[in-house]
Amino acid sequence: MLCPRLLVCASRYRARRGHSPYLVRMPRLPFALLIVLSVASCRSQSISEFGDTVRDADIRCLAAEPDMTIASPFGPRRTDELLTKVRANLVALERLFEVEVPATLAVHFRALEMPGIEMQLSEDGQSYDVSGMEAPSHHGVLGYSTRRRGAPEVTIYVVPTGTLAHPDGREITVSFDFGTELTIRHELAHVCAMLADLNGPTWFDEGVALELEYSEWNEAGELVRRPVPVTLRVAHRRRADATLDEVLAWKEDFGAVYTGDEQPFLLGRPLAHALMRFLLQRDERAFPASGESLRARLLRIRALEDDELRALEPEWLAWLTDLPLE
Image 1: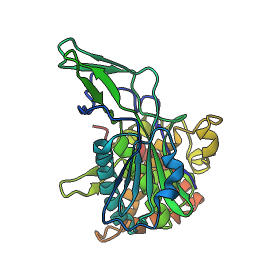
Image 2: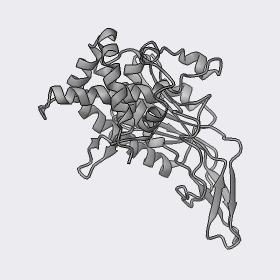
Image 3: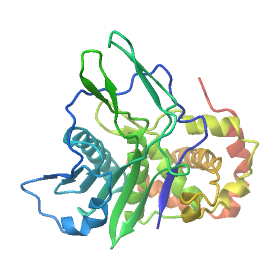
């Protein structure tokens, strides 16, 4: 089963011109595989089983941890930052879905060269401008999750590091992060939903993943609902451009989308998220007990028949129209 994360809309991930991405200064590393092994590791997946990934030309660092394996096109420092994000989101999602992801989890960050990126350093070397940047995607695919030999595997596309020549002779490595953590959370949500036996039709699967993707961290380090993320704003603005029947009937040939032979139903994602948020809030009113788990609510939602959902369409559209955007 392949569960992709795709661009929500063309403008969603456009470059924020004038925005300063994450900047780290580090020496140039030889283009070679750096393997980082945890001394106390005890894993059921061997490095040899990760051979297809190791052979990829863009892999520079492989972190074999007790709970997962991370393959990255970056050096150890950046790879460790990505590992920290994966682990934090995995722990939070496991708690929400009431599952434990097996230690055979493999996460592969793949670099895509993005045409049109321009970086220019000021003459004094104190600032730089980046233009032409958007989230890395393969025909609109930002990432996907699947199973290989029964083990969960996640692939996430990232922008390769760039290099700027400083006036004093130094080379500065620039690392970009355009929504990487959101893609991590989206794909791990697919993995956890699968383990929780929460697979359903496309609108349900993507609605669940998007609801978690656009959650946010609270002060206690928990993922909580974001009031009106960009997907719901898109759904509000485009609510007249697709019917509920289209959302419910939505099916996608991921293989054809990935190869560019089929265009994804981009509007399906924000509308699926809007339908999922509406149904979750409706369930919370019907079952207000604070002890109700997310998994229990999602099981009730998945059990709804299409005719029951169609009967709710007027109420859903009214809710979508009245979304508090401010």
